Image (cartoon, rainbow, N blue to C red; front, side, top):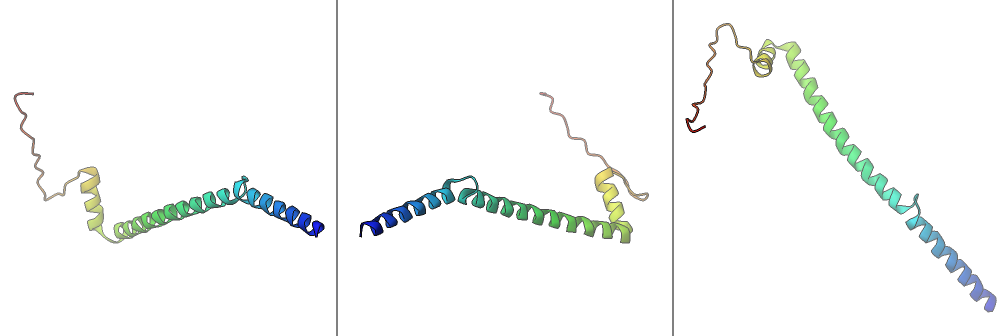
Length: 98
């Protein structure tokens, strides 16, 4: 009976050591959880980039197919005005106390 008790003690100690290595080593559970978080973050970033690329693709198609999109882009980004348009600039009144 004594031999069986020693065998159980040795097996129990081995199990505890293996569990400690699993939970606390550099390649164990913590690293696995950190990698899962990193993968989830990368998936979110990839989805954001896919959405941005889809919007850019739609804009490229729109610019290739229609003149109105190019004109709108010229107005908003470059401040251009059309040939039959009149440009008005509103200047705010300065406060005399400044």
